[in-house]
Length: 198
Image (cartoon, rainbow, N blue to C red; front, side):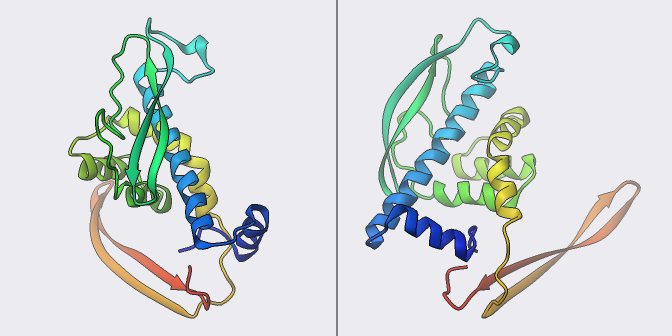
C-alpha cells in the first residue's frame, strides 16, 4: 500500500528530479538509513534513561559519547550509518548488533513497525523473530515514541478515490475482555490502483 497520495508522489518526483530507477533506489536507501539511525538513537535513549536534549532528567553517570561509523549491507545496497556510543562503553545496539553487517530483510520489519501501528508487545515479537531476543517494554515504548509521527501520518493518509483491485481477508479471533471472551474480526485489505503501486 502506498503511504503517499498521488499529489505527494508527484511533488516528491518534482522536488528530487528523479531521472532513473537508480535515483529512486538511492532515495529509498536514504530513507532507510534515516529510519535505522532513529531506531539506534531511541535504543541509546532507552539505555541511558533520558533524551538527548533532556539533561535535567539524567539520573546516571553515563552519557552520550559521539558516534562510530559502520557500513551495513541491506537490500538497498551498502548503507553508511553512525552508531551512537556511550562514555562507559556499555551500549550494545540490539537493532543492529555489534559485528553484524548484513541486515537484509530488516527493511520489511521496520516497515511492519510503521505500517501496522502495532502494540509494544507485537513490536517486541517482531524484533524477537528477527534477532532472536526480546526487548524490554520500555525500550519498545521509546522506539515507538520516536516513530509515532510517521505511523500516525501513514494511518491518516488520504485514500485514492478509485482502486482497481481490492483483496480482503478476515481472521476471527477470541479475546478475553473484562470478564468474558469476545469474538473479534480482524480485517486486512490490500489495494491496487490503476498504476499498480498502492
